Length: 117
Image (cartoon, rainbow, N blue to C red; front, side, top):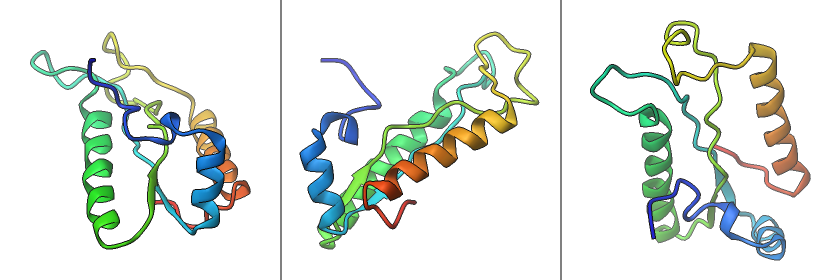
């Protein structure tokens, strides 16, 4: 099986597991990083890949310390004012990005999660 930025995230859980985790006081890590150019020598996904792997490593340490932790699906749409003209650098409107982030956080809060990092 290939690499996936959804591995070990809430995407792989069912709603009962998410409900239980929120009731148990789990915290949520939200990986964020924009898909954009990084020069001709690197892939477009560097920012989200790094954010995602950092969340996985942080989760390991928190779980070892007895803190139940979930990783939300990665958010990788952003505002590319500088690199937006390069092919592959997706860009979204500022108000769209703000609205989606708000909706993500509101959903997590509605499900009972009080701490999102």
